[in-house]
Length: 76
Image: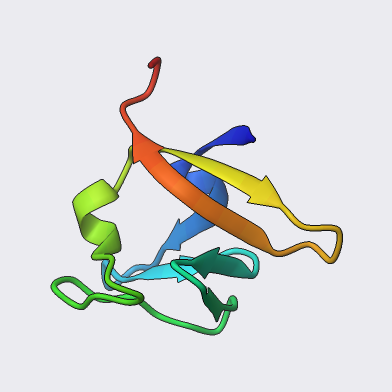
């Protein structure tokens, strides 16, 4: 398992929305870089804005999909 900074995985767009920078998998659902997450909307049961700027614990599969396992405060 590897730790990532939130903004290493997500791009914050000028309108405040978030877009994954690479293919991610959360709770068994896979999303790619073309997906836009907006405030108050949940994907795979997760509101990414709730975890904005936290660090991410994830595993990368051999085909490059990042499986997000959890979010935590930086430095912990």
